[in-house]
Image 1: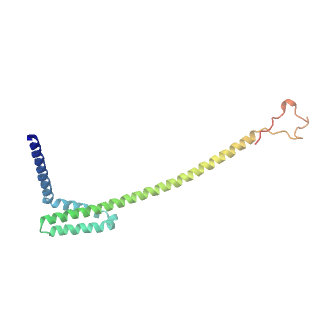
Image 2: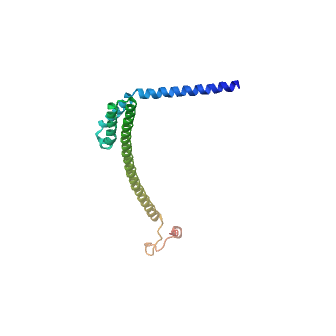
Image 3: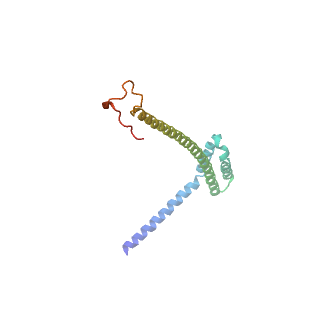
Length: 174
């Protein structure tokens, strides 16, 4: 029973330490309201520096700016901290929208490049197939030229006939 009592006390002690530590972290986050606001302002500044994506991120940036203004006007520190956190979240949403837009543009470029490569590959395959067909035709023509020709009547000249040792072999079947 003595050991189980110590284990029980250790569990309660660890739980209490965890609660106190969590409260300190939470209080530290609330006690530093400028940190989320500063991060939100930094993200907003980055987003506004890029005019290409301004139209896309403007609604989220406007909401972040509204929450920052509300936080500055707020008298209650806890509510100001919540508004600053909300402003940071809106700024991050705007940043994520920009990232998604850039990723989509990159995907579109890759898709266009892949399509162009597929078209070029099809052209190259057609060219190779045409070249192979020409090679096949040339081989058949060479084989035709290499076949011995049977002597025709009247093509023997003055002798009248070929000697038996010089007779031509029979033509190959086609």
